[in-house]
Image (cartoon, rainbow, N blue to C red; front, side, top):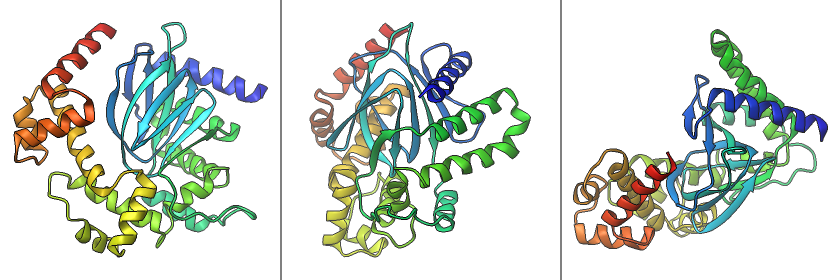
Length: 303
């Protein structure tokens, strides 16, 4: 426990030194980002990519699919597939902000490593599992993240040492308590990997109309099996997932690129503004214009 606290305290200091103000920052280490946030009850929406998230301070609540997750200091959030989510910080003050590190998972590297590393004896063999996992972070994983952050002060070492430390993190995760979870999404031929491939295709083609039967064929699954397994992993049906991808992107366009509601709806694949407004209100609780106005006001209030 003392070693864990020493490493965690040091990581908090490093993150605050590199990121003294609230926000989200991508670092010079490919795939590694930092988050510094204050508590706020405004739900933010985004698409979580497959990642390993390490919570250093504070607490956060995420609604991922149809399920709620609360996690904080000392815990590791694993995301196995792209999932639409809404979240807000529960605990985070100016004196003690919410801090976390997130490492995007390189699927190719992880799948190769999973094939090389045997499953620890006595570990459960899991296939189709929920796409999100929360557990206590192992001190060896925390230490590897600390060394990865140290490279930000020695950028010339990142190209050589960065991939080595990232591979170490993957290895330590594979042999740890969440190893079976990660392995299920990175084992060729597993149904979890097939669903992950379908989710990736949906993410890249969300503007197109959804044909569930065609998507099931694309990943070599029977339609009924695909539908059942998809919901087991994401907690959403393919149709619900498709809608959320579109609506979250439309919200991003209106917030970040100042696109009006009608144009945002068309940009994400809606042909009917009425249908877009109806489904937007159903997901976010209010019409597009009112929702975006409130979110912008909330953002101004936090700066």
